[in-house]
Length: 123
Image (cartoon, rainbow, N blue to C red; front, side, top):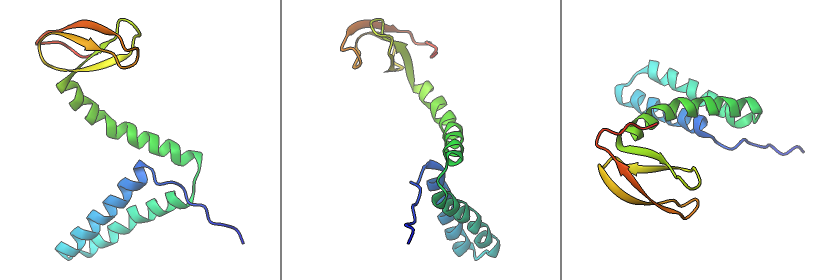
């Protein structure tokens, strides 16, 4: 007897399952058969992804995560300034607070002074 191997749930599969539950809850609240029928689509897609592990699923997940991370990255750039460590080149994140500070790089354990202006642009 052949053992059934399931793929590990990734970001896209978890998103589809959450979408399924949201549509199912809204279908119950609003007593909508249309939403109930639509909830079957993300559930079917999530089950298909879990039952068929392949390289293509990884590419789909990577595309989904790149689309999802773009708005989060834009929000992060508003609150933080990114500077490179002069000793090792690692990119470090600092709060967008004007002034001179003594920074510590966790990658090379180096310490160096940085200055952040009030209208500093992030790279």
